[in-house]
Image (tube, rainbow, N blue to C red; front, side, top):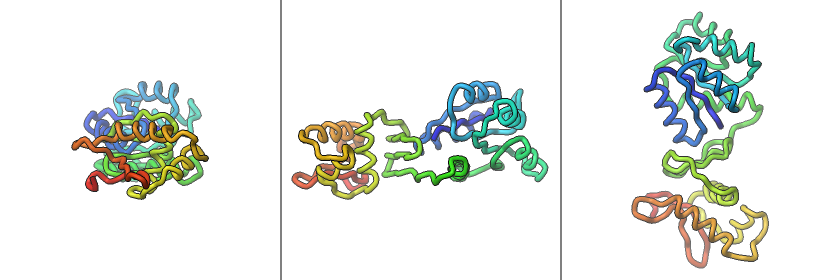
Length: 227
């Protein structure tokens, strides 16, 4: 899921950016309306977190321009310190889909964004899969390790998905090959090479990896404290 944060308060913007990125979402940020309009015209976003009190073009005007001029239906979560009924009605009238008053909890921002995207897409957004500092977002297809996106080949990412779906479960070679390729592989080195890449990427402080080999039986993804 790709989210645009439009917020001129650097502290709030940084907190939102770091939280959402660590949760596995793709995130961009704009400090003003003009930058936001440029990003929205050149990139595809699944949702916008929009502050009302922006310098220059305020959030209400930006929302109106998105809806009226750009004919954009991107879900908008409006953030503001204004909490009167008239302020909220003005936000909805401008084109906001939801409204959150500052100060807010970051987890509530995430929950509201997921609800907006679910409504816009017409289906249930799958929950983020997480084990320790490893996370995978099925909606965006992005895996992160310690807040940084992992750059994995498609088959390696599919292998990670299979292991993440059942943390701690021991998978045989045959099970993993079926999950990744849909059939058994003639060369056992094919699976080993993808497992080796995951081991390198998911190295812990003690030099061990979250990918564990149980000789003669298979492989599993383990919680860091289990090592």
